[in-house]
Amino acid sequence: MKTAYIKAPFQVQFREVPLRELKDNELLVRVELCGICGSDIHSARSQAVDWETFGHEVVGVVERIGRSVGNVKVGDRVVLESSTFCRTCDDCRNGDVYLCKDGPNNFFTSEPGGFSEYFIAAMEQAIPLDPAINPKHAALVEPMGVAMDLFKVADIHLNDDVLVIGLGAIGLMALRMAKLAGARNLYAADIEAAGQRFEVAKAYGATELIRSDRVSLEEYPFPRGGVDRVLVTAPPWLIPTALKTLRFGGIAAYLGFGYGPRKDITIDANEFHLRRLQLRASYAAPALFFPRCLDLIRSGMIDCEPLITDVRPMDQLEAAIRNQAENIGGCIKTLMYNPCGKALIE
Ligand SMILES: [Zn+2]
Ligand SMILES: [Zn+2]
View (tube, protein in one colour):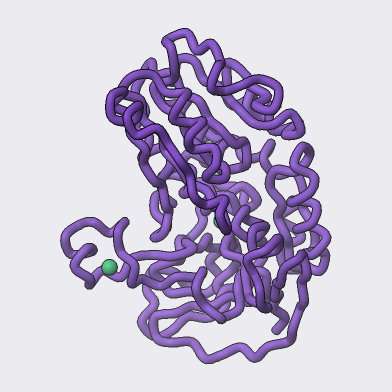
């Protein structure tokens, strides 16, 4: 079968590889759709120093199952969690499955990724897709789970003022969740070039749009002297800025990547202490909350349609990744489809 490899800067190669035998607890999925993730863009830009497999936002149809698979059957359309928990380590047994580092994981593996004709997943990662849900929208459930983790970590309460910095698909979905949770003033911040992303933020309920390269976030006249919560999906150097936007006792929730010296930050620890600020990390591996996110899609509480800005056949993967990286104002989420998934996007 064909599978894609990536290497920085922005090179993609499709290679013919053998399909290995399934283990008893695994299933073979014929990939219909696979989304391009922000982390794939990081790989393309600089992180894939050698050729590596990639793609983890998968919708497809179960083609074959191992002997002990009972939760899905051949012919089911499924979405796949990008990683899950093991059920047997101390953290899992203590009920802290979100801390598990031992479960099946699609990120740190040399096996073919989601940009392939077929994908082998552990049965625990597979969730049958309700036919009432548009599969194109379901392809966004993995990043929505990431947004849900960020949202939960931020612990937003009714009537909180909330600022979201970074309006990628994850930031926008987290912003929508903040709105649904009862945010009062809801601020959406990104650079001017983010273009269309501001439109989606507005449609999702943002009350003010902030062009952070035009207006200083640190000096922004937030009516309560700062926001109660700030959600950051941006590089680490924005963390000190995010902390300065908080009012007394505020919480900053963060996810993002930085490389080299730019991954280090400096903050005023006295201010951090005396203003009782909190900085919390969100990290959505194991991937959780899929049923809840699928229901947000099914109920229409989160409309994924405006996020899907580019849909292309799999063989255009390299061009699609470049477009996703370069056209930040016009491209939010790209979905790639195999010939077998073409009908789903029409
Ligand atoms: Zn992802
Ligand atoms: Zn575990």
